[in-house]
Structures are given as structure tokens and as C-alpha cells.
Image (cartoon, rainbow, N blue to C red; front, side):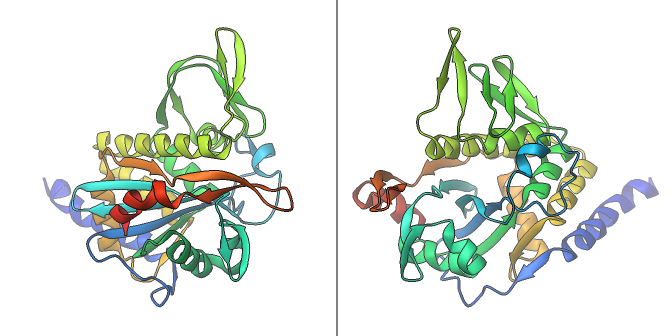
Length: 296
């Protein structure tokens, strides 16, 4: 009985110790904020720091060096209402006076420049920043015992290391999940014929949204507090947040999203070829007006 009574205190202390090790960035002066809800800029980077070289798909993951934004999304929380807006990394915007893909903002000026660019070019105020790298992503998925994704057809992508031999619900471990969310050459076998997704990065964004929804569902179905603590620990070792995102806010965010079914959307864009021949995306202001108003 004494053990059960002391369990909440132990878990609280463990969570505090875990979160106290999170790297914090001074970003308060950059973020414009939102007046009616809370907007989190969620960024996934392809940093290889702290990655085990023996991890599944290591050959693909270690294929290039450097650190770039692999995922850019805005998570909006308004009470129990959770919305996720994905921003294609090929979005063509003004970055510090030069037209570039939006993911170049991070490479040029880090989180500060990326936040400024999102606010200036997309028009959505940001309240908090949350960045996770490959190792954090792998740790989160593995701490949950895998995440279930329903595949309508067998699928593969040799460039990301994805290989799903059968259709139907499949439990993906960390390495398999990473191959799934990074796939830009996603190919399904439909009636014995290989069919590659022609939407490239836009299709990848949709799969990332589906996977994040699956993660929320997995968190919601998990009742073991030690599993949740392990998930927090796995992410915390490989995450960077703004200096105002404390443990209380982090736990509040976790409790809100776990088990939620977020409304997902992708920033409306049109295909565009630059003078140099780059295949990019332009913001479709007319199509995006109502969507952006809901976030701004």
C-alpha cells in the first residue's frame, strides 16, 4: 500500500528529472504568439547525433551528413481541439532576402530564422517550439512497443529502407517507422503492379500526419505509467524546446494529444519551377485563406 501511495511522487520526480535535461533555446523574442489558442512549431530534423550505427536502416539514415528539417508542422491546441497543419519543406519563400525552400531557413539561421520565416511567409504566430531528431523519434516509437499503421497495399521505398510485404495493420518499430515517414519514393503493389506515389513530398506529408495520429492513439491506449515515462525519456534526450516550454506545459500538451484524433491539413500549394529548374511549391493564398485564418 505504501508503494502505491508513493508511486505518483516517484513518477513526478522522475518526469521532472527527465525534463530538466532537455535543451532549451531562448526564442521568446522571436515568437509572435497566438491570441486564442496555442500554436507549437513542431520540427523533425535529420540529425544523426546519438544514433546507434547498428540501428535498422542505418545505411539509409547515415547516407548524408549535416542537419536539416525533415518535417515542419504547426500543432494547434485549443482546449480539447487539436489541429495539425503540415508545411511542405519544398515551399518556396523569402528566407532572409533570398527565395529558397522553407527548410533552408533552418539551415541558414536555425530555429530563430525558421520561426521568423513561418510567421512572415505563412502568417501564423508561434507560441512554442519543439524539435526532435532521428534518435528521439526512434526512442519514442520503441518505448511505445511500436506503432500500428494500416497499409492498404504492400509498400516499399529502397531510398528510405521501407519494406512492408503485406497489406493490413502492421506494427512498426523505430527503424521501420522512420523509413515510413521519410519515404519520398513510396511505391505500392496494387494488383501485382508497382505504382509509385507521384506526389513525392506532399504524399510524404500525408503519411507523416497519419503516423502522428497513430502515435497519439498509441499514447492514449497506453495505461502503464512506466511506458509513458520511458517515452518521455526517449524524446527528452533528443529534443530542443523554447525556454518557456516547461514541464507543466509539456505534460499538459501530452495529456491533450494522447488519444486525440487531430484534424489534419496540408498547406495548399501549387507546383512551380524556378528559373534554375528547381521543382518547388508556392503558397496558394486563395485556397489557404480560410485554413490559415483558423490557425492565425
